[in-house]
Image 1 (cartoon, one colour):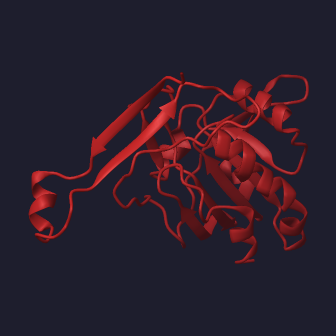
Image 2: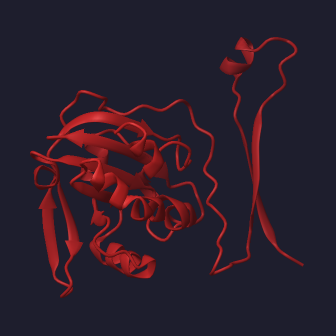
Length: 217
């Protein structure tokens, strides 16, 4: 018999209830997380519903300077700045909630790898994936996904850049131990200035893919 954990969280309060019409039913969020692991085809993580979110940056803003890390072919830690990635360039930056998580591994990163040639044909110089994971995890993930030079996988290990642009995603209440990560997003910057920015609700994956960037180029 499959054992499962069922979580339920009421999404209403005394304040919100008073705003609802008499015929409006109480909303709730319920989901079941089976204690069963499938290594080849893990199920997407389900994130709690959350209020409409926003970031501290928007189209027209200059991206804040920050430093990211990665491991080179020799396994040595290297760093690269936001300016290195964007100055005088057309850059695509996209973020994921976590390395090795299902949607990020099966859809988000592979989508940009697959469309990298098309993006570069339209003038994109840099395609970088950012995650609040350490550089060692990012290297292992890159190797697992068999990514070459199509996409640069960068560590925002302490979440400095993520906080600077207001894209933190607090998953501390989830049993998988993710803690504070980054919301999923995709942005296009020219010389460090944001030209396009799609920020997802939590870990949803609806309009932050490679096709969404191609559609605005």
